[in-house]
View 1 (cartoon, helix red, strand yellow):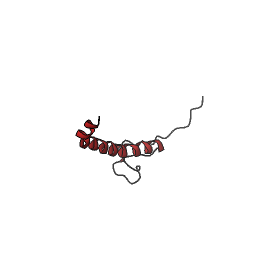
View 2 (view 1 turned 90 degrees about the vertical axis):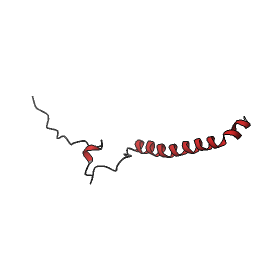
View 3 (view 1 turned 180 degrees about the vertical axis):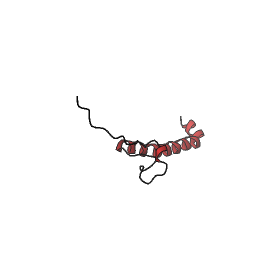
View 4 (view 1 turned 30 degrees about the vertical axis):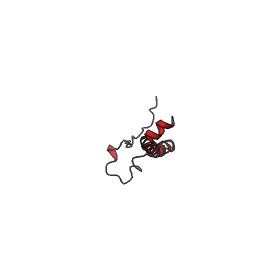
Length: 68
């Protein structure tokens, strides 16, 4: 087992660094999603392309319920 680590310590180090980088990217995204924040933008206020980002929801006016 020690021989394996001695022969492959460079590869193991690179893999651990990549895992740390990916974790550092994904964990804040998950935390923001749980808080209800968007990871791509701060919202549609002042955004010229808000209809194309996915967070755009056109407002629909609700009419009064019809009486019978």
